[in-house]
Length: 400
Image 1 (cartoon, rainbow, N blue to C red):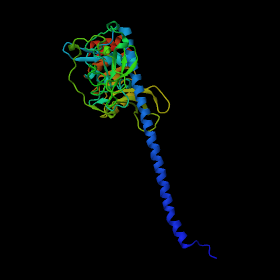
Image 2: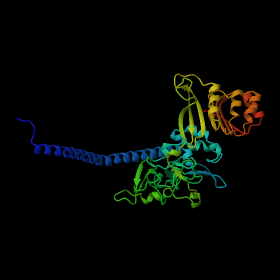
Image 3: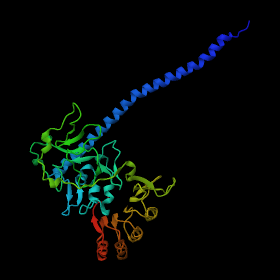
């Protein structure tokens, strides 16, 4: 007897197997699609919740910094320091830098001159996450200044203002200090970072914005979203608005781009590869590849040793257009000779200076040098520098 199946049964079996496989694949794809459809909204909601939480935390930090500033100076910071010619020098976000853990910035920036000239440009390219809202892609201007996504209340901070707590006649809990802007962002160093409530506040599609109040709480207010809390009218005039001329702002508009344009603070190496002599350094590298700030540090990929004059020479050779240098060695005659080869050098940071009369003359002949920040300047070196009539400013203080 033959063990073969009937011909008709064989045909049925051959035809049914591909159908079963396709059915299984279809069920698997459908199940995966349903799972993704269920999970994606939850992921999106989690991201939005995290973004809102971080925004609130940033505003709380700013609010605390403003109160600490008031405790020290007996007034809130001016919205912007504006000179007699109407030119803005530095804004309120600069003034509170010591209270957001940015002491080195505050010591380094030259507050006697405007924020955007060469001597200050590097510092105002510092990117601060606490001045931004997570998820907003416009984070830098096309000329390299990181922006802020927060704006101050122009009845509190305006031109050369000095508003005090006693000016809030209706209480601190019924006043807003800073709010979440909704567009037309400006550099955080811009001296006119305030905005009327009639302006744009809050991210598009959210129907409102977060605000930090005078008592330090952060609230979400909206006049558009159903069932959302609206800002009480009492908060619109507490304190009383100043003269309109004091809250007037220039018509400047900034072109913005995404994070790819941010200056990058990163660790690079003098040598390529993994050799022992690959000295680590911190550099501020701009989007066009230029290096503005160079700090040579005393540790390497493998092991550690103090930096040397040769290390400085290699760094200067690699980055000949650097503008600011934190010296790894004392500023002596040999270092001065190296520094004079940097055509765009504006700032030198030195722990100590030991110059002869000849070395001081070399330093004084660097035409682009604007500031020498030094911790230890001996009397002999100081006298030699003074005798050659330097065009740069000598600042004594802690080197960052």
